[in-house]
Image (cartoon, rainbow over all chains, first blue to last red; front, side, top):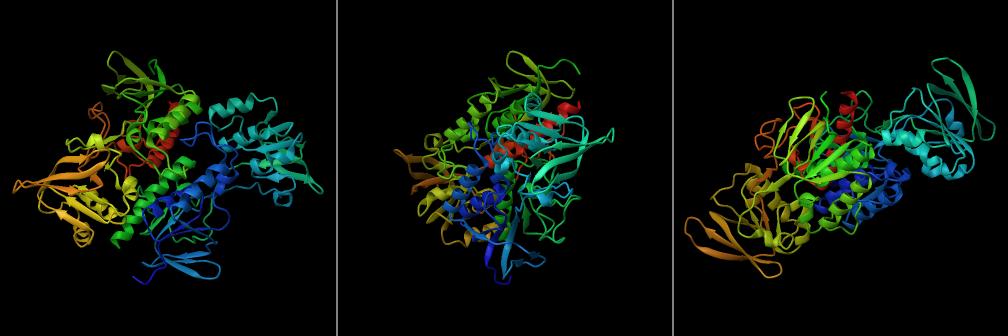
Length: 306
Length: 306
């Protein structure tokens, strides 16, 4: 094999990437973790985590991410801030193309996560001026304001509940007539005086001059349109894999999530995927850490045998 | 469906079972967790855990198990101390036979774990004080120490090689005069300066006062006995699934571990397995919690749809 810079490179420092880093550093592998922004991933913007086993009182997403980062770094993991542009992984020595240079590795674990879907109704114009994908980040700016929350899954309902800590009123806009979220969350949301569901409805536009002033919604059964006067609009309508650098280098499913076998290996030998970016039945911190432990063991065996 | 006592019963309260309990209780399911002994499973006897993400300083196995138990119970999980004798799960209403009675459930998650085969030379006394069954877990605690590794299969040889990253010397004790492991692993082990094979030998005793100090071995051909001075003794002579109650009710692999699909469903609809008891490529706390989160979501969907 041609000379490599690392035995293992991990792309993305969410819970999956940090777990892979913990296992790899502990196994004394020659490993580098690449993160384009701040370690922690989506967990960073998660207000409160109460279903990651080991924290009976719950823990803020920020604190949990930071604990994982410190654990990995203390075990010797090197984390570089760098965005991956593309991959050339058809040869044994796998090339990872960064902005200014390429690095070469024997094995690769992709843990680049996933990002929230957007409504495509011109919300870009209002991001930071009323539109947000993160209650934790922006909720506190909406004290005693009226906000619209869009979506019906766990994240949407959990975040809508969080918003009630600040907002005086939360309209929960969902395109169906019942929520998809876990029952306990549904009960909490529908029993909360500040939350008013807007059933069978989609967002068709956003109004405002300097900042957001109203959210246009259409009832998909009656076609009736109305504008909800609101200072904020929080959007939680699904997620997309963060795989712009992939360019068909590994096999993905119809939504772009990376297909893996039970050892977390992708369609390319020596290349693994773990966490939200893979074709998993569930995207949770618990599943990300499980995936990543398996992926790292698999990568370790691959490196030993090649 | 005939009347059931519970929507979901979970068998075994290690990390997988407690995680399933956390998810199920949070989803307000009518759920019972059965544990024959004390909640915690093998983690209870794990001295120190430093690769479960979220605990930068590490945590004792006992404390981690207790945190998971408290978390589950605080979320409303009911845990009963009861041993499962057998299962009748061919019908929709699944029967779990206990000592004095049967209980009936719509869905079932088996998280009964696995147990390492033991040498029966009094190693219980030294577990967490030098004796270990997991190199990935405990290898890093033996930096510059001398250790004995027992076994000759793939796991034993792979783990012995892993130990050379930390220990200054690894005696590999095997009862035959050649290893069973894959040739490439054999070659690597026998070519490794730190590994010294001790052929035709069995462990007959363990020495030490507070912690392990020596491993007694006997050559089965010459009957010669000697004591190897060692700080650690890693035993890899097989692992057995805790499935005495199964009686072929679900499909298992050749070693008795339960086969599951990617949703953690077994060969029986509505019956799931998670953690060490399933046919997993890796047995860790991280993988147990990941499996269990998926199994519980799958069980929840099954219950909703049946």
